[in-house]
Length: 170
Image: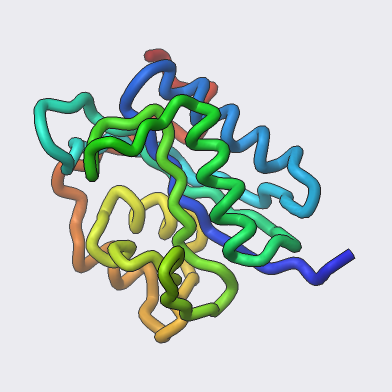
């Protein structure tokens, strides 16, 4: 078996059966050969940042041990989004499932398909808060502590909701 890498993936959704789509993504990744979910953050509700009047998002982060390379993992994440009915018609539009590869080991990468760390990770509290909950001592490849990003961003527009998808009542 190939050596395992550590990846962090942001999960979000604001259309359809949100909890079911998020749960299915986690379960599918965990059942995929070469992938093993090693942790899931608590969940947060956040205001949509995209165009129009969108419903709030439900956001979390998962830790994944994987033998896939970053591009193969990206392909898998995009296939899961498509299977959940995601349509890429409007930038930052509402979505049934959004899976963003945030970090992959300490890799820094920028090519036509993928940028690591995720280029807007440090700007989004709805990513940084669950990432910090899941891995409080984590540092970005440049040494920036995720806990410091959390303090700098604050919690505006963010609401802690529940520890697991099963604990929610909506």
